[in-house]
Length: 358
Ligand SMILES: CSC[C@H]1O[C@H](OP(=O)(O)O)[C@H](O)[C@@H]1O
Image 1 (cartoon, rainbow, N blue to C red):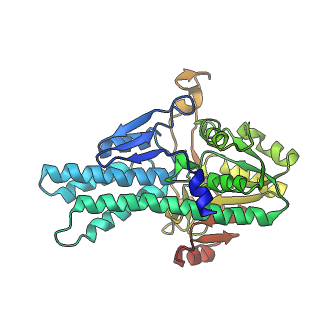
Image 2 (tube, rainbow, N blue to C red):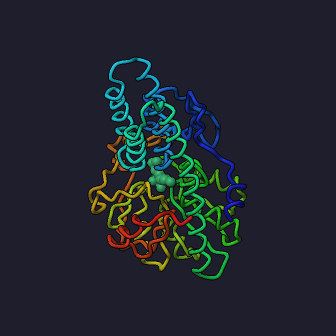
Image 3 (cartoon, rainbow, N blue to C red):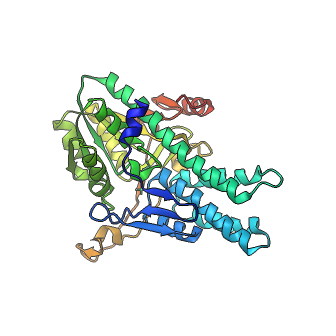
């Protein structure tokens, strides 16, 4: 299957050019494909903050490349470049609070600096580390797709109707996608009747990004308003809800796009299996439960307008963009290290002790 998945890779959202980072501007998709060029850590931090690039793994990969750009600038300026680089780390870490991949990637880059050998070029070492983070995510996507397809195949007769939320595809990662990677692979294996895609207000990652990716793959796709999910589970024979994650706590609680928690409650009520797909770089074993995960709130104006076009009354708007799904509502967490059925703290600890299986 690995070769077929690699052959199916089409969309990329991140391109490293050695001296700059190009990001496919996800604010403008699907109507325009515009590449946003970044030549500094501040430019990448701004791109993450403004959601030019979004999606937990893609955010982490972008921050890793940003540190390569920052190190070159700091070293050229002379002085204590390592101390100065900490300012760039802090700027990038503060760009969005929920996706732990951002913090994880910055930590990987800093640890690489601490392992420098005498005479080793720091910038070359950092660039190799950033490329490795990117490639590892791509490989993790392929492994998760294979694990997830096996679960779908074994669950019930095929083909099946699936529902997904937000965007977890090539646009959100360094490769094939996490949850959407499983869905795309299941379609390649003939296991998918139809994919129902929540539009995912207010940023519309579903209607603008996921629908665009799935149509590009020829996957039978139906867009629905987020509030139709219960009705779909009741009337359309949905067998799985398949979603991503921005941060998974040590007990298996999952922070993901707002609306995920209610999908899990609905899935439990309707006997629909609930699958979370995320690389181990999204797992934060330092947090005991999802109660500790910082949940980003964005400007209320994102609820009141689309593309700058206001359509709502001049009302106060509450715009949390993530929520936490408790582990006891999750049937399975799929990572590149393997699968955790009915996640608990003990099972998550066992998972994180494993080497990658693929
Ligand atoms: C593969 S991680 C995708 C993850 O990120 C999304 O959030 P955002 O679009 O705000 O970056 C959403 O939570 C997805 O599940």
